Every structure is written in structure tokens, then in C-alpha cells.
Image (tube, rainbow, N blue to C red; front, side):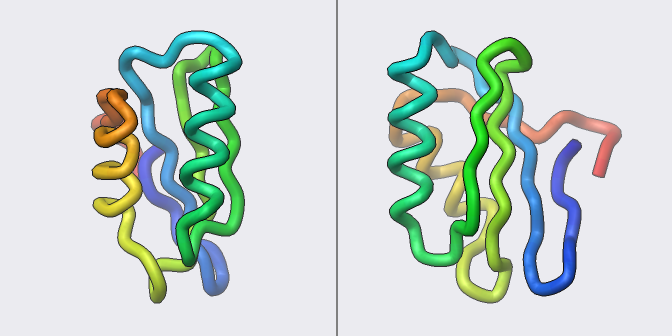
Length: 82
């Protein structure tokens, strides 16, 4: 987990503290999908994770992290993994 660069895109997988229920999942998916440079968003409630494919030439993962913070969640990249 963490950040993986793909051809022309990157993937960030955040663990998200405070993630509860389908409503929170929909809020995260809807909000992040509206950001320029975000290609796709997938929230896993059982894992408490958010998987984001994005264009690093348009947006930085730190902006995604701040957006999750602004929604009231505590995102973090799992340590020891890329």
C-alpha cells in the first residue's frame, strides 16, 4: 500500500480512521471524484481504506489527504509499504 506509479497515473491507498457506513463511503467517493486529476476512487469499508487512481501531473497525494481531512477523516499511508 502507499503510492504506486502506473503509466501516466499513480495510485494511493490510504487507511482512513473514522470511516463508518455506506454514507461516509459515498461522501468520500463523490467528493474525491470531483477533483481534477482524480481518475477513480474506491472505498473499502471492511478494510477501512480508500484506493485512489490519480494523475500526479495534475494533483498531488497531499491534496487528496487534506481533502479527506476536511471531510473529518484521519487518512494515513500504511508504513513500510510503497
